[in-house]
Image (cartoon, rainbow, N blue to C red; front, side, top):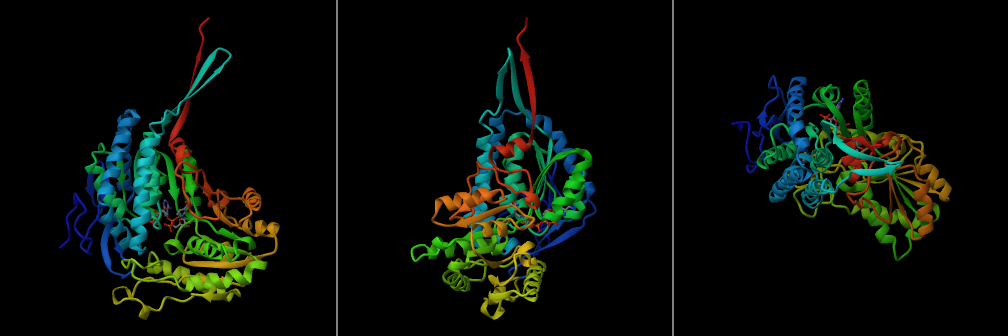
Length: 504
Ligand code: NDP
C-alpha cells in the first residue's frame, strides 16, 4: 500500500511504496495532474520511491507562495531568520543518521561518506549562513559633506536548482544563504536524487518556517526546472549542474534580466612535480591525488580528472598511483570499508563506460579499471548495481576528448609534462576553469603555478579543503559568479545607496 502524502516525519524506512511530495505554501502535494517519477537505488536497482513530476502549474503555485511570503520574511530582523535556520540545522543534526542512510540509498555513495561529509556539511552550510547574516554588512562612505550608506536589500524569490552528486550538501549551500539574506525560496532538486530535499522540506515545517518561505518542487529539469528559471516573478537563479544546462538557464534568464549564479562543470588538473615524489612524500602525494580523482566515484565537480606528472617523476609516481588505485575497495555502499560505491544511475554508468571506450579508441591505454565492475566480486545484494572501478588512462594527447570533456565518473587520465610552462599550458588548455591542485614541496613554484592557472580555486598539496567564508566558483565554461561567504549573501541582495547631504 502506498503511504499517503504528507508524512510528517521521515522515520519509516524508504521502500518502493514511499511517495514523496512537493512542499508548496506549507502543504505537501502531488504534482498537478498526478504524474510521477520513479526513484531507484543505484546500488541494487530497486525502486525506492516515487516523486512528483511537477509542471509549470506547480511552479506557478510555488512562486506565488514564495512571493506572498517574501515581504514578511525579508522584514524580519536577521536574528529571527538566523533562529529559524539554526532550528532547521538542529533537526537535520537530530536525524543525521537517517539523512546519511537515505542519501547513500538515493545516490549509491558510501554510507560512511554521506555520514562524514555530505550531511555534516549540509548542517554546517545552514549554520554558517545563519551566523553570517548577523554581521552588519552595511557600508558607510563620507565624501564632501555627504554620507552614503549602502544597504543590502533581499532580491525576492530565489530559484535554487541543484544536481545529484552531493544532493543535500549543494541544495543547502543555495537555500541557506538565500533564506539568511531574506529571500524566499523555490527549490528544484535533481529528479535523480530527490529524497533528502524532501526530508529537509519536512524538517522545515517542523522547524516552524512561515508558510511559503521554503517551497520545494520535484520534477524534471526540462519541464519544472525550465518553468522555474523562466518564471517572471523569480528574481534570481542559483544553479549547480552541467555546463550545457547552465547555458540554457542563462538564456532563459536573459529576457527578464534575472541575476544568475552558475556553478558548472570542470576538467580539473592535479599537477604533480618531482619534488612531491620523493621517498618521504610519495605516499602522501599518491593518496592525495587518488582522493582528488575518485572521491564520490569521481562525481564531484572539483575532482582532479587530469593528472599532470613531471616526466622525470613518471616512473616513480605512476606505478605507485596505479597500485594504490587497484587496491581501492569498490563495493556495497553500506559496508563501512567501501571506498567506491555505485555511480548515481545505470544511465550514468553507461555514459561513463562509453567515454572510457572512446578514450581507448582514441589511443588511450588503460592502466587499471576500464570495464564494468565484475559483479561476482560484489555481495549478492548489490550484484546488479551501477558499479564502475576506478580507472586510469595514459597515452592521450592533451587535446583528446577524454582530456577535454567532463566524464564525471571514477576516471582520470595521466599526462606528462617537461617544465612549468608546459604544465601551465596543459592545465589551462580546456574550456573549463573550476579548480586545480598542485603537488610540490617548493613554495615558490606553487605560487607561480597558482598565479598562472585560470581557475577559481587552487589547492596546494591538498584537495577540497574548504573554508565556507571563501568564494568558490569557476571561470569560463565552469561558471559565472561565486558562492560562499559574503559573496553568497550579496548575490541574494540588491545594493541600495542612500545619500544624506548636510543641510545648508
Ligand atoms: P544537470 O545540469 O543535468 O542538472 C542539474 C539540475 O538542473 C538538476 O536539478 C536538473 O534537473 C536541472 N535542470 C536540467 N535541465 C534544466 C533546465 N532546462 N532548466 C532548469 N533546470 C534544469 O547536471 P547533473 O545533475 O547531471 O549534475 C552533474 C553536473 O553538475 C556536472 O557537470 C558537474 O560538474 C556539475 N557540478 C558542478 C559543481 C560546481 O560547483 N561547479 C558542483 C557539482 C556538480 P533534472 O535532474 O531533473 O534533470
